[in-house]
Length: 103
Image (cartoon, rainbow, N blue to C red; front, side, top):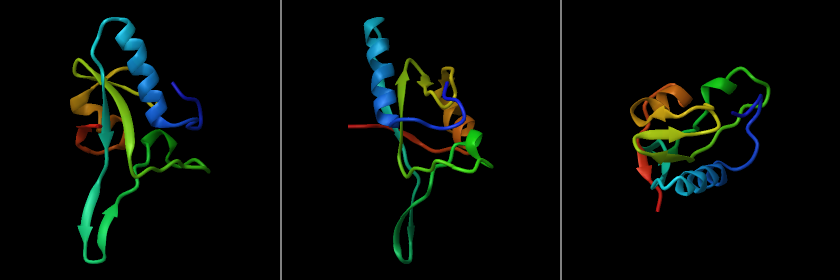
């Protein structure tokens, strides 16, 4: 669980968690979240803002977020607990965002 601010890189966090799960004999994968819209001016990458930081002075926002996924669960320091993939993006960002496997 991260305290009052997000420290580090989400991809590195996801990879570190995946390494720990592999030691347990599991087969994790890295999920990617993006919300892209086609607009008249071109492609728009909507900012992903974690719910827990809304209202803070320094609010992190990303156009892409990575999370470790394994056996139907998402593992993310933003939550501090495993969350079912079906509810993960709503729990973290407040709305549904598809999770795709990162290459």
